[in-house]
Image (cartoon, rainbow, N blue to C red):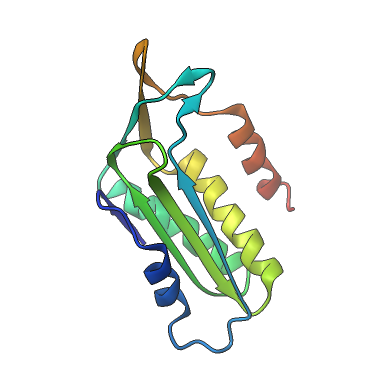
Length: 150
C-alpha cells in the first residue's frame, strides 16, 4: 500500500502481487484515471490532497477488512496525490486469490471504501475555475451494499 506523487507501472505492480505464488488462480485489478469531463464541465486538471499518516492508516484498515472477508492471497493499493491531468492514473487496486469471484468482490469492496472513507480531497480545474469535488450519492450507494452483507 502506497500513497505517492509519482505514476505507477501497472505491469510491475501486478508482477509484485503475483511474485512466486502459484496458488493464485485469479488476479483482478482496477485502475482509476482522471476524466476530462465531470458533472457536465470540462476538466483541465485535478489536484488530489490527503492527510498524511491518516490516509495510509485508513487504506491499511480497508485492505485488512477485505483480507478478513475474502480468502485473498494478496492485495495492493497505490494511490496518487498532487496535480494530475486527464487520462493519468489515479489509483490501482489489485487482489489475488485462488478463485476469480473472491478477487473481483474484494477489489470492488476496496475501491468502494477508498472512494468514500479514505481521507482524500479532489479539486478540479474547469473553465469556470477551481472547484472541490463532493462525494457522490452513487459512491455511497455502492458502499451500502457491503454493509448489507452482499
